[in-house]
Image (cartoon, rainbow, N blue to C red; front, side, top):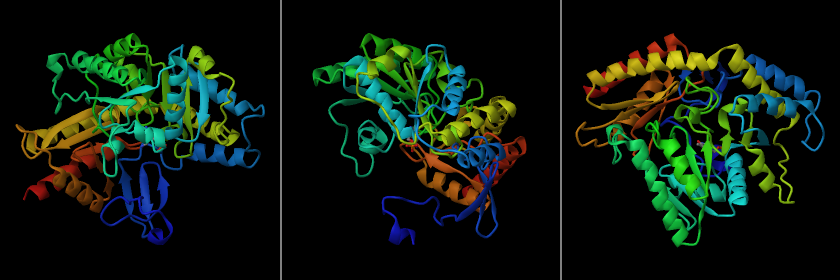
Length: 422
Ligand code: PMP
């Protein structure tokens, strides 16, 4: 039925797709009743079908759901609670229904405020599925079916200290950031002066790459020198996942001009947000109204607020730090035993395991990565691969992921790697 009724550009995960029928916490169940430990769904952030989030949504949808041109307490209470999590100057909210929509809006704002249309992005990045977001997503425009970057876009290298041209000891955070200046010159030469620099605070599609120390502070300096504004895409990594901080950009000690949010923000409910400064919001209000039919409606706002409350009540950020550190140490131990485990990286519950054929040449092992994912699935553990070379196993489970789930993940991965070696 899918093949007959849905567009062929939509794929399914795994060789043999899973027919899921139910989700609870960090577990998914298929139609035959098999249980899977979900290690990749960073959308159902506080757990699949979290009872409080479900109850709040059910209660609100039974009373009222309409657009934001009426007064309603949910949207303002939510905006207040959301801005409390952010640095002071980020205090104006716009609500939308997806990460793509949030990034689109952020780009419009950066362009309105700067009066400049060029965009600098990080190689390998994905920022959304709309025309303009595909235009600024190297993952798409350089991927299958892509047509390369349009003239208003310039990509800088991924600040990757494992595979890239600079290592942490080379002052990588500074050196990679200098490329932004070269990119700005190229855009200026093409009469598209840069108005925005888009950067994920930890690179997801890029292969779970933690930015080198000082990258974002240096980048911010260059971006502002060029009269552009910095958009932090927190669609994958926000809301406490990195453990040490609520927002991943905070790990770099920088304050963005605009922050975009999606995925975990609504625990699966379609919600997105853009938070910016009063100044930028004022420039954007040039007379043309901005309105999103669904964004910030009473149900979405109630859900968003419930997610923030659950994060606090269940101390999930602290939990992500604790469980994530243990998991990373466990994965690191595999590095000692398997030549193929080239790098283990990440922060909190946003981790990556890069598989290689050779530790010296760093030749990627894409085949092994996909075999590991398939074999782990047979063991009831869901993972997937990422990165431009498709050789990074990504781990980003719902934050309720426990210490025993972590032990099970490492032990099973150990067994699967050992079986594949023989
Ligand atoms: N930004 C990033 C970093 C993403 O990973 C995604 C989705 N994978 C998006 C934006 C787009 O979000 P959505 O699919 O909700 O439109």
